[in-house]
Image 1: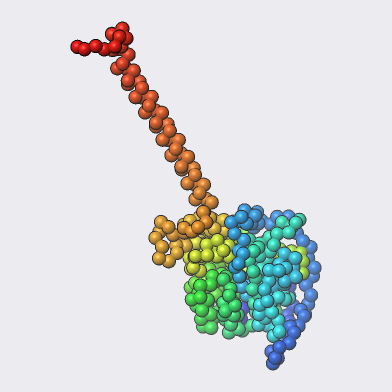
Image 2: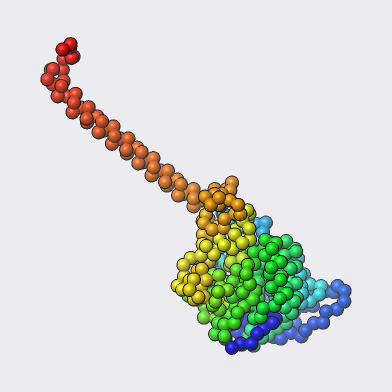
Length: 407
């Protein structure tokens, strides 16, 4: 059984992807100062032009005419987000750095937060098949950790649980509509629990990774284990649960988290895996919904995402799939789930914008009804004509077609 971990750990598996050497702890100095540069520069990575499997599955271009997340702010509480990447340029707001005073969260020495943010908001670019699900969203970076589990060992700096709780509150207080938490603690911390409640009470959608320790005791992960948080597990390209993805009641649904393509700091892309990278697919879907259905509360957004998940083997039976596999298109277009408070069930999701799927169904039904009425009218007229002829013709023949006279 793995021991309890009371510090945030980034929920990305880095053993074969990106190894970050342990960095010295930096003492907090009084007053403002510039954030230090990364101790170890990340190796350059080439752009990838082949369409990654999650983009094939979800086809962001199909979602774009409906919603892009414009006007929605998604906080990424993580290792920071590199604002210089071409696909993230202009999308990363000045945030907060709880590791190094003087920073604004837009520096990423691990590459983890940049990858997470890119799944949400990477802009489409010519010759690059990778793009985010909600490229119109704004990213609010909150830098809290560089620590990952590398070959079974923790590596890199991180903040305390209390500071992690403060990061969640900071994101909420700075107008985040959605908060992505691709970090995991394996202990129930009262400050973190209170911060989650603070966010839930302020109508913020919280999405958290379910953790990668399935084969190491499967300990209960937090914040995914708290009420009001969407806990996300990982699947591979075959639709099956990734072997590392944790199971339990805290898994609400699953999303791509194995061999996922993400943006790398500076430029280019790399492949990564972990429930870290499944969570932002759900956070991006929440951003799409917050734009497309602004009348929905955070709880209704979460309900809708769960209600429209695709069936999965073992879904709902503790198999690690939760309600099933995320389906962003269904979450946006279908009218089931997410009923606004106080509304009648029949008009639960009505607003001034027509639902494309509903309009198509209504059009088909109206056309079928019109055809049926036309056929019915023709058949009726034909029957009436035949009946009249059956009476008139014999009588006319008997009178040799002379007008009828008085009896």
